[in-house]
Length: 306
Image 1: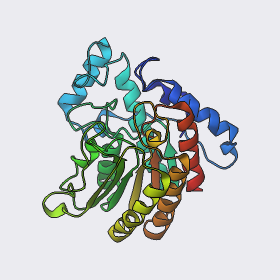
Image 2: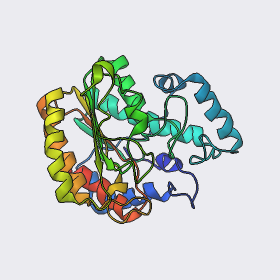
Image 3: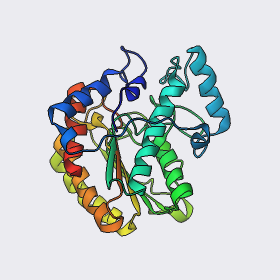
């Protein structure tokens, strides 16, 4: 999914989540001549009804109001209420849901949306640069519109996908696997090994906190058990949040992974998708605040999905 409209989801030139993130990805996309091998789809806009699959009406109304004035924050201070951010966030969600439609309708097996994977937003609040949680909306959309129940959500962003985890902590049909920097050392301070789900969902969630400095070799060894965990769940659809902020050199994180790890995860999940769900896999760009890392990670994910 490509289109200038996706670049509109940002919080200003000086903010870590700025507009250049999209342009960096697209520049490398063109250099690698992906146009010859990948079908491109334009961004779409989510409806308010689609937002309510996950978010409360009161929160949606709040975003609308503050988006119109551009004053204040949508959370406790990380996510500014920039003028037009409601429309921009709706574009992210709509593009993610359009990608799901393309996959479910048989137009493709895999899809990738670069400005997506806003995994921190809760049902009633923004958080960590995330206004609407398109990951959570995607899960609800797959269930309510396509009857897909067993979903695997895999997250390799440096930050724990707390907005997804806690929203589905008691959901036994959501297989959750999250590789992230140890919450003792990084926002949002969650995602510990003992967080495995609640109630009937205990054992369906796998949090893998990584110490600062973790390299590809270490992460790949840990992936072996994670892959068996996903395989056992037999998902009908796989969602991948592939944040580039887990790469070495990101300005706000301290992991030491490379884009080769992202390609590796994409390729392994592609095989699992072919085994369990006729290839149905959607990858979402997630975080990343070093432009060179974004170029490499997201385009290497595309390489892994081939």
